[in-house]
Picture 1 (cartoon, rainbow, N blue to C red):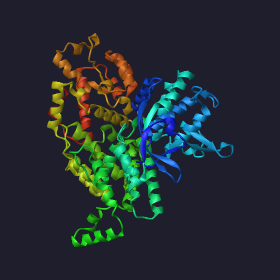
Picture 2: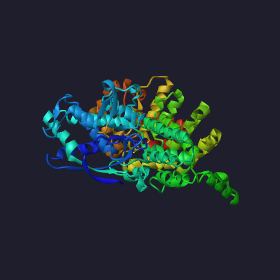
Picture 3: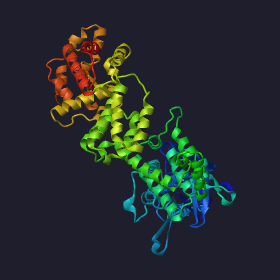
Picture 4: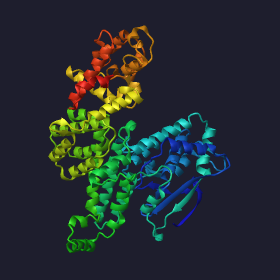
Length: 638
């Protein structure tokens, strides 16, 4: 590197233009990092300086910009705060003391943007992103409040633009009660008292900005594998031997694909999809790899084994001839030898696939936001309620190819997956013995796209002679018995919410009614908040005398029996408490189809509880094609 020294922001922003290059991730700081920065700034007194970190840049002489390799998160945060503060001043208002102060307009020109050309029409931000990046448009139009002809393209729903927006709102709230003297102090701290270790890369030292980026960007909020992978792929394009036009197009495609990926991952701000969970599932599907003994096997594979310099750097015409000769000499299939190398088409095919995959992945997790048929939405919603567990790679591979699958085939597939998950993970003790089987199926289907073979395989996992072979009654019975011995009976069973919700849908479909109870209303996470004990848990009221007269053990058994439990929204649940059945009936008469059925009873007795429990078990038997011996039903219920 050409040199480094401690400099203030005023010294660094000395007729330099800074840009965040396309291989960098976008703005990723959230509340924790912003709070730490704000605390450090406020704890800084009027005299001391504060070491704020490293800024590493490379001077791009062709356009006289400085690419920020390390330090963009800190600089972005500071620029957002500075803009928020300066918004409180008029353009000609003096900020600071007589010796070191400046007008607002001069500070804007030094740190935020300059207007040039006739009438100042041309605007050039001092700090920003590469052009055509959604974050660049957002930063210009929403943070700096500059007009832009591309304003209609502002992508406010990406993870990174949402973080930019959050940081702006964070600082607006923080300075809300500050007077102008306090704001001037903040400007002085930002521009004069924060000190940075400023490095400029010298290419003559043989250093490469992409490798430095991977090496240095491990402070603050760590890079995800998905972010590192983008940088790696862009770096590999610089090693390819293709025409310049092809390389430029591929690099643009990589950037466009990552914009798409982050657009979908952050499409629903309250339900963000984690970068690396998606990447791992795609890796399993695309490469057919998996190692349960390693925490993040996809990271090692993608960055240390597959998309590596060694696989590309020798990819010229001479090497191409050599590996063909190697294939012939060693009697190895050309595909196996070919797999040792990465070329233009490998990268292009990979990014095209991962772009299609993220759309399918989002649709899989948000079926109601799609244009799928109602039946497909229904079954995908059921699987979402259960949790996808090991099936995400497989379902993603299928949904990528959805236009080539008949709807009845897709419904059968979803039905098989839902059945497998409910039986295996709700009625049996935890078992993950078949996890690799489903990962293999994802890869095989993605490679061969044979839906008939896939359905046959899945059917074999679940059924034998049209009967559900997965369900083991003794195992299920032991779970329920153990819950009565050590927990709270059916109330503690982890499949209770799903079973009761499916029973609710069954009653609704029988009369072709509209939804009265939404799954998200039932709370999803907490059984305690959403399951109502019809005969209440704590009561001495005379109206429950029949139950109160039972000995403690019998009362416990009937209290937590299946038939005494009903799924309700939190709002209804909070209204009921330990009221008498007569009072509950009035609320039950409209709350849900299950409660309407309950309200048709004149009294709530042990017999009605056992009868309702038996009805639900009969539904369970038919719904999942399982066999519960008649003589065991009473034992399961009390």
